[in-house]
Image (cartoon, rainbow, N blue to C red; front, side, top):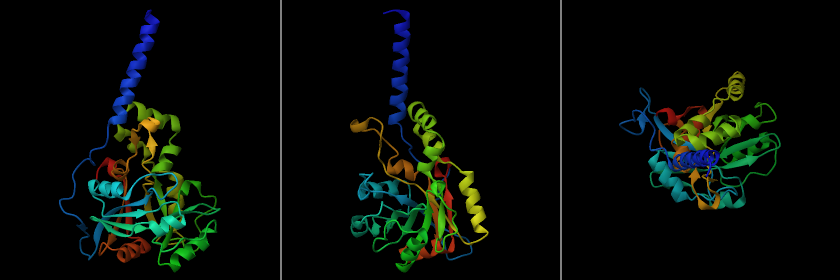
Length: 287
């Protein structure tokens, strides 16, 4: 073996070691101090700070195989009080979706619904919304069921947000963070750096989305902000051999949506979302 071959072999081995190390690492917890008691009381009010996940997919979506048991376990590990399930809408996703408590976590059933102008998150739902309708009509249908409709994947919307009936917008979306930051850079982070670095990279503060939200607040207040975890648990590093990146646990430890409500039940949470009593937290940097 000549020197050039030896050098190439060494480089290949180094690449394999780095890729192997990064693909088996995981995030163990959020850094920094954690609340001693949960839920946190909002001082001077009857409200509590409930921490949860909005925009989560399961096996009821065409692009996900995750189970409710996996989602519930991840919620426990990430200290989530609630999770809003938003599978890509089908008759089965609404009929067979989980509602109510699974262990300590409240499951709220909704859907991700497409329209010609952009995608919506609607919850809670008791029956499917009509397909491929104007977002204003979808919002009206959700409201008739006691639900709310939010701009989803705001970076892809083809029109402004001045649509009657919308309650708010997804001001952060982790999947959008991966796409906006550039595929090659994201791939390099996956291969060479610890996994936490990848999820820090996905926490993109998209100035276009935040400016659109600020501008819309001048027309409609409140216009509730939510964080889109967009959890699928479907990225296989080694294909059929496994090595999942973006497990429910990892995605839940990255981003959360907090809701200020009196009780942890569906009516209280929905009312708080309607009133704009929410904030979004990048927990990967510290809770």
